Each structure stands twice: as C-alpha cells, then as structure tokens.
Image (cartoon, rainbow, N blue to C red; front, side, top):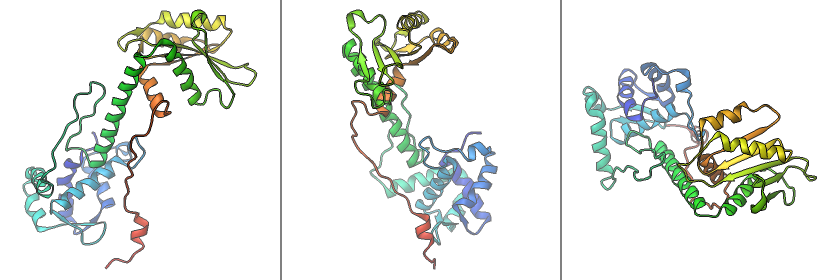
Length: 308
C-alpha cells in the first residue's frame, strides 16, 4: 500500500503509546510499518530532493502535531508519552484529527488553508494532508512548473534565429564544447542544409555535434518524417551525432525511429518540457529570486549534553 499521510499515522501512533510508557521517534518505525503493511522499499523511500526518508518524516510530523495539540508530552528531548487528554481522545479515534485541527486553529487563528490553482501545467495540490516539508517541496515543484511554462512562452515570441542561438548556448552551458574557444556556432539561416547549429567537441573540429532547432507551438507534433530529414542532413554533413530540439513534442513514431537507428548514428531528442528543465537547471537566462535556508537540530550536538 502507499505510504500513509501524517494525519493517518496519528491514531496508530497514539495507540502504540498506550501500550508503551515512552517511545523515541525511531521506535515507531517498525510497528507502524507493520501496521500499514509497508514494503522495505516504501519504508526506505527518500524524498526526490534526497533530503530524508518519507515515512520517517511523516511519523515525525504526526508526533509533532499530536504534541502541539496537547495530546502527547515530551518528558525529555526526543521522548514521547501520551497524556491523559490523549488517552481520553484516542478512545474515539474518528475525532482525533478534527480535534487537532481545532487546536491548531486556536494556536494560529489567522492561518488559512490554501490551494494553488490557476496554472494549467502539472500543478501539485497543497492540502492539509501534507507535512510542512512536503508542502514546501510541492510549492517548489509548482513554482518550477510555472517557470517552465514562462520559459517556453518567452521562446515562442522570439525569432527562429534567436532560438537557434539559444540552443547552441544551452549545449555549451551543459558542457559540450568544453573550454574550446568559439566551440558553438549558428549556421547561416539562408543555407543551413537542415543544420541549425554546430558544437565543436575538440580544438581541431574532428568531433562535431549538429543541431536542429524547431520553435513550434506546444500543441504541434514533430513526426518521423522531420527526424528522417535531419538524419539525411547529418549524412550530407558527414556527421553521426545530432540533437533535435523543439519547444513542442515528438510523435511515438519519431521516438521509435530514433530508437531503431543503428550505432553509426546517434540522435538525441529534446522536447519542450526537457528544454525548459535544462534551461532552468543550468541557469541559462535565469536569476536566483530567493534562497530559503532551513535548519534542524543537530542530534549529535544535543545528545552530547546530559539529560535531567
């Protein structure tokens, strides 16, 4: 089954504390994973950012909410114990989450629940089921997707030549051409022979990557025929390496054709979504708007101090 949300963990965690006088956070992992019938992969799943285990983090937030709502006590740092209020409430488990929400509203009366709406591409809904950390990741994903859309929209109002220059700069930014001076060039627009740009891989120019750039509307599909023409242009240029970049997308036939090419010719297809991601990740024409630094307790530091 799927990894439970933090609000689904609350009641089972309280029930565990009824059987045990005190528990540390790590003590909850095994019994809760058994309760929810999680696989080893689910128990060990890590956030896409690489910043921590999902299940462990959700247990942590479940306990934090129970503590903030006054249902658990922490007699020592990292130690949890259910109090009398929690004992009374856990006998009616269906009321636990609503009780916690009410207590949090009392603590933060001006806090409002919000959902991100309005952006048509890949928006992740932010709900109270997510932990604050997961909300942060979801918000970050929504911001990135919004910027991806802005990148493509901006490219579409530029000239075809500007787009060709952009993709050459992007490949250089990604490390192709290395430190070679003037490693990238845009071919003459009037007589490009189906090649829009070239990246020199070595000083003498023996290794070259040829580029085709198509600035199409996002709902336009690039089919097999256009890729075949590009392969023909590579043959004329006596090249076996090509990158076809577009702001739109490729048909299944185009993708299958590229996958069927023998080893003598290598074609890489980059669609609009991948293009926007590369531009964002490599910082081409981008600037950092804001940096958020999040800190957590250094367990080694605090554990080195004696408890009462």
